[in-house]
Image: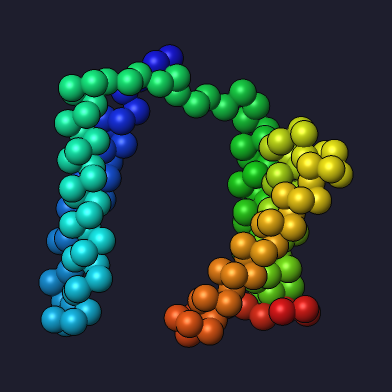
Length: 147
């Protein structure tokens, strides 16, 4: 099935922006600066995408689940990731969960030549994410056995 995903995406993002804009009433003068900037950019880009969807539509083939078992298994792994985070910590649980999801979803990842570089890049991204949240944003993430 082909549909105009640009139009659907633009409308959804405009709805999200309206919902968030309506929730900004309780923010302080300085606390509203960043959300207002992000939401302004979101509204502008969504509006441009919406106009583009009418002027030069590009219908795309929509994604369909071929195997519902894979989707259920992936959801179960995400739930397991959330549960394991308290014992293993954010970093270890994330790397393990990502590795399992990668092997499950992408058959080529079952080859070590594909899997090892991908999991190494994912581990670096997870560590950077952890560092930014814990050290720069002072958002505590679960610590576990290794980190």
